[in-house]
Image (cartoon, rainbow, N blue to C red; front, side, top):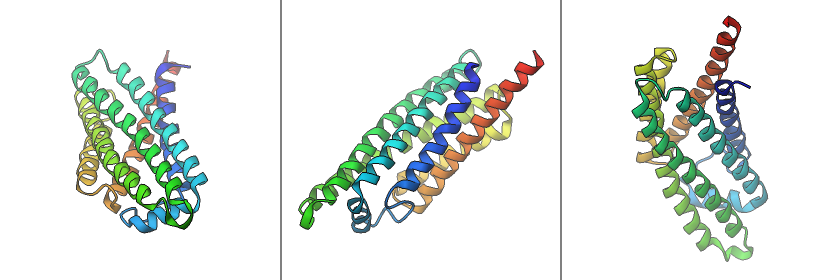
Length: 214
């Protein structure tokens, strides 16, 4: 399989996996700022919380791998410096997502302890998850914005894709830094996943078009 087509496929799969993982979470798309309700949901079904975290983690890894494939395809262009910097932010954010998922699973397990004996631990873990999640999404958002700028400079994708990617990255950075467990951040993450999906599909189509033309 062509390298660009493979990278595009990874971006598509990553978006789907992260959405499935989020949907499987016992608290789903509920109000994550309500700590009591959040821990109640996670503690009611710690097994499903673990499955959700596993799928979300897989999606994060696929996103990082797909991103680096796209980055490598732009490495010899005029936007190399921006894409190199974007890569650092994305890998830091992806690593942070793995830690966040582990803390959420731990919080669910602690919250499931009989008679609420693990609730204090669960609160500590979910608070840590929120902090690391905030830093992680901010890092990925910066990388996403830099990717949009790189696309605008190199023009290897349509200018609209570059502009939207940069705007979504800046929007997600603002939303997460303001309040990670807010509806605004959820909207920003959905926009980020949708844009990743679009870039993945366009990459696959461009590769197929170039293959046919040859």
